[in-house]
Image (cartoon, rainbow, N blue to C red):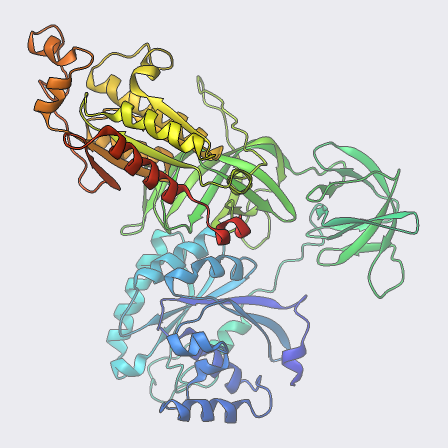
Length: 626
């Protein structure tokens, strides 16, 4: 293995390679490593052989796409980090995925980069992922951007066409407050302007890519910043307690007094231990150490050790830039874990300040953040969070949001504390440490909301109560939220105007969601005549919402008229009654359609109970993974 491949990454300059899928990122890196003599012996012959087997010319991307799935699908799946030596200077090249489904890997892959190479196919110009990746560079604070205009051979090396693409990319970057340090026209496959100047572009007199990389500023020293030592773990050996972690910034010396976490306990650094070396008197940013403390206090994982005169910011309401990775939109009220260095905090989204329109890159008000969208939001925690606000070129404030399945669902750089506006209701929701999966495993059922809608007299409450009894007898935990029952308590202040009906639905949905999160099966029996109101209920409940249409002709419902409401409406005693002088909008595609104007009620109850059982059943695989 060559010296470059074994070079230390600690002092290296990270460079992330980004761009739209198929614009040539992996090909560029393979060619770059070859042209600068950074490949292992025999690697080129291996690439040539792999390319021949597939009937291709030499395919430099095979160097990186080492997973068979990547070769078969032709896309880069994960971030690849490659130590790389250029004229004696150490770099780490990060090949970040371009395909939409792999963007979460790019978030972590690009997080510590000092500069970026944005690869743009000169024949295609900026595409959707070009905009997304440029926005990510803005989000994570990378300011040194080299734009490689790749595949200029497809434009016959025409200077005017290349200039037009350069202008369009410049305009895109300007909208994001980014400015390219340099544009390099190139053909990565053929090596034009990668490490050697292209004879096919005599009009270009700028630096090659390797010369441009040599001009990237070296990483700023973090040793001179205030101390931040996040606690990774605490170990005890031979009656001695060791507090282990990696120094993110600053330096620590034996004898220093440090403050521990939000509890602000002071302690003295009694010793600094490190693996495979003798005890040290001091340590600096980038080193992994274990310190002993006097007195022998016990920090928690995630606590920050800092010096008394340079404390981090502390806040429980935090302004956050967000790149949202989940395919379902993000809405106010959702709860997650915020991972920040070694700490995890339960947080809730309390407001969405603005959402970025990716078409024109303008910020607009929004009630939700779309899939793979960018936004500025406010997070609230049940306790103070210690952090340093996000700053370009540092690791400060780089948080990620994690869902209940421990999946990263958002990149979340922390901007600073969220100010409280005059008259604002300050709400700090707390998230349970008992997960939905914990409750489901204990109950042996999946928390689900079954929303029964239909005309008055169609049989919603009758079916719900009948199914409730059958399901309870079968050992299931089930609750019915009946419209009239709600209106005698929770909703007794509401009338029957359209606005009050919508509020009635909203309250019922919020209660149903809480019960669903507690692992219960919830049967909601509510006329809820408007599709828009039922869509609101579905949005509030989220996963586990099943719409059931309890269907009976109006004439049948009037004949039944168990409450005398239709007669009162016909005589003018009640106004705005659904089905008489107010509309009912039937579901378009309900999960279950129950016709109750024919057949017995017992049969409909059995059908409903069976559907609920099958839907809420927790399979063996689900039980094991819960």
